[in-house]
Length: 178
Image (cartoon, rainbow, N blue to C red; front, side, top):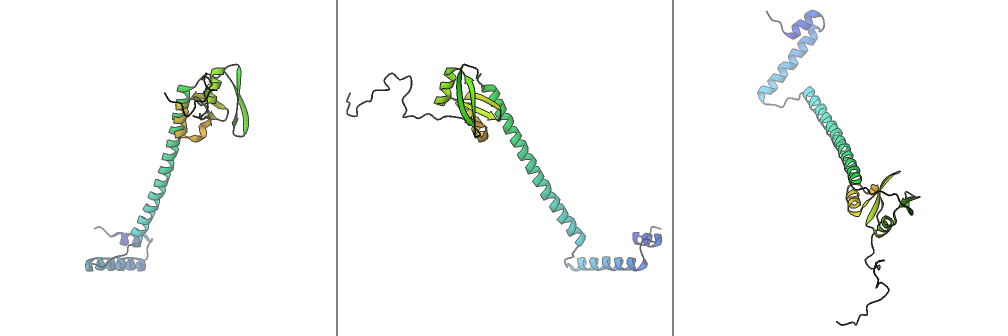
């Protein structure tokens, strides 16, 4: 004959007769309330639900942090790839000086690359000592992803005369009629 768990615990000496009786009373009271349609407060179930909610919130926060780190890593990989695909060799005989984090640095460039940097057609991008020269479009793509990679990107003044313009010294009169 199968004995109830309560009887087995009492016989094993783990629970006293008094504990068995109080457990039966609690179970009977709970069953009566359920039959009458009254709300039964199950503290254990409430504690389990609360613990599950806390675990779910903690797991969600960890997942969000992990996703942000993965997104940041992906952005850095994209920037590295853009630089590798668009980098221009910087070796030359003309020096180009610029400010990088409060320190004056210089690169030896070809004179046409130096002029392109001054005009804003080329830009210097990178972190710390890993600097590269890339076209303006590549620098703008990098700046969209992470502005901190942009070291030098000059903007061209539309009102400034072009160095190659042979008529730059002559102004056009306002009253000129064709």
